[in-house]
Image (cartoon, rainbow, N blue to C red; front, top):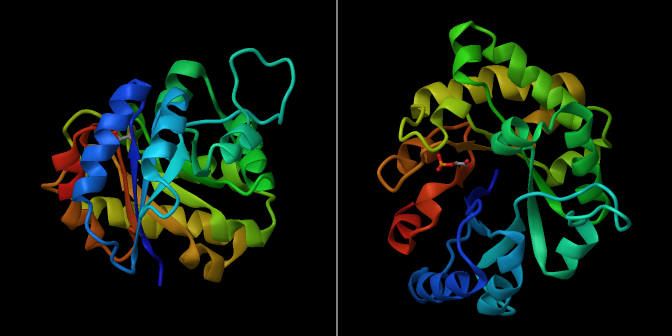
Length: 249
Ligand code: PGA
């Protein structure tokens, strides 16, 4: 049984003080955690510490980061490493988000280096993959997703897959208000993403990996995705920034 995972990706939103206020509001309202659900918030690096303090020692919500660099330390101006994130209490880290791929040119082996750095330090990577509108229209979705799975995850120890999550985020659905449908997203996960994983690590491992859906998830459509047999939760952007909306999800 794969546990449902809901991750709030704040992107470049909320100062450290805004994050504290938001977390107070959220924690006051978040219900006692049902057994089969994990909740994660992924604030910007600058708000990790204030969110950590707000969460305290025994919170039902876990901390995640939005990115990392693959070296542990050194002359890499502006970068943040896995040991730094771990020390701040992060358990998860998002890798290869489409905004990083598009705006910052991240791809292929660079993304795998980040995955490996996260694994080496006991962080759980959430690998984002997804096709653009152009790729969908020219019929290359299956090829693109298979390649992204391969680039991100090939050659790892099979045991590592137990701590890896994939987020299927069609680029055309991110921040557009045009979510995929539960049925379509489930078909992509079942017919493309799990087979791509199975080709690398066998069917049993492929069936055990959690695959989230992301792209314009809201309180109104979340249930449709969670009802799908091959979708194990959501990566939520815009709707994770408001307490009411995040709680609704
Ligand atoms: P969105 O973003 O929910 O605002 O579409 C999702 C994401 O980019 O992870």
